Amino acid sequence: KAGVTQTPRYLIKTRGQQVTLSCSPISGHRSVSWYQQTPGQGLQFLFEYFSETQRNKGNFPGRFSGRQFSNSRSEMNVSTLELGDSALYLCASSPLFSKGTEAFFGQGTRLTVV
Amino acid sequence: AQSVTQLGSHVSVSEGALVLLRCNYSSSVPPYLFWYVQYPNQGLQLLLKYTSAATLVKGINGFEAEFKKSETSFHLTKPSAHMSDAAEYFCAVSGEVEGKLIFGQGTELSVKP
Image (cartoon, rainbow over the protein chains, first blue to last red):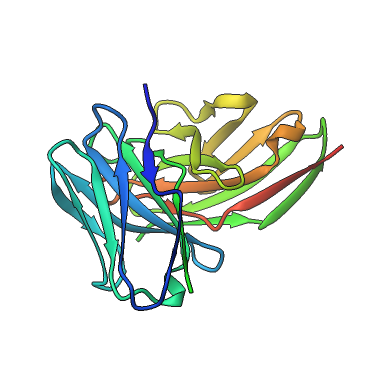
């Protein structure tokens, strides 16, 4: 079974631009969550989608948004990029939307904002 | 609110020595606890998880962790370190909110030959 696939693996963007990251979950998984990883803040929860609906959201500005499609694939968008948005963005999928279900992570998208 | 504290941002051991990575959690509800490993330029791989079935949890690659409620701890151990164990390890907790993992700051494990 294929794992979680994130595209692209690497991105370089300029301040003020917007970016869209894509995540394909493991087949059969309906829950997709996104995390931002930086050296200073560590791993921080961005949001989670289940059945095309955002169920939870972390403490990030409205420039960060996402969506989930009927095939469970998910995208996240960051508008008006800032230097501080440079990070590794990780997507994780889970078979269920419940407490205690393990999350399976993709390899991440490394975003560099210059 | 739930939180995780990992003691020691960097741990160094010799090959063949015991590995002990410390994790303490805070939770107002019975927690679900996880250990993940991250190799350079990779995502996170699940090592093991605790879901109240047993306090001693065995994971992949010879790792195990013991849940101690009285100490609010979930330390990760491996009897004999291997060079391939060098990576960053993250402890995480969930349970208050579906689908949301709260991670510790991570511990980087170095293994000396």
